Image (cartoon, one colour):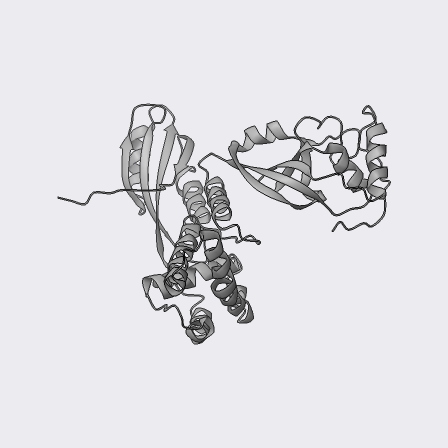
Length: 357
């Protein structure tokens, strides 16, 4: 339901305008489309328009040069409770852009409404930055599970771990019921019987307070990876509370006692390739300095659009994200070196590596 607080009469800002969808799409390289269906969207997250961004200010109020007759008609219709149907929005990350329904958005804001019914098509970024890779993984997870809530992990590959869990849970449900179970149905049951109960234990034990840089979903992924997958301690059919609760309290106590220490079991390797452009005649000296850095495994002078290729193997614990570790290394150890013009960081997705013969 729309929440109506009464009309607003704040002045139009003639010096600002709504964001341009095409400009933002280009900036984010957001070209992979996903239909998200119809749901309510908070009006304050609708920040731009596909074709009418010059007609509205940044708060989606009609600017003076645009006709207000249609806006008045729509506003009156909304006051009368008439059903005008859902607007059509494009979504790029956390912002929405109006494809159809600009005047309905403006009228709803004038009437003090908080949200509006919309059909949403999300445009997902296609570049290879850490943020975009994680965003695509989150979008794929949402597509496959169709869960009613958003699960936010902050590390690349964690969504794949959750999808594997749901697949295993689906196998269990099918074996127990001898019927085919759709992946989305298995995801709903996994969320209800496994994910949400364990997240509640994490919150109740205030474990997330010890890891302010982590989300509850991060802690869930970490605990289940080590307790259920690597340790293979999980047995379907055993109550989640009976299996996890004691282990969870022991885990929380251990983390509290060792929070100022390194946790070897929490270390994870990160392979990174750094493409570098350097100033003329600085290549050899730079290669020697970079090769001395402990995480560097390989360094090559190459021909093409870049000058140097570096393979780096970093490690991190649960308290620090991949992005933080990589950014810290590149900015503090590489980009500060005299002669470095620019760097590009690549993170492998799927890899196949042959061992020594």
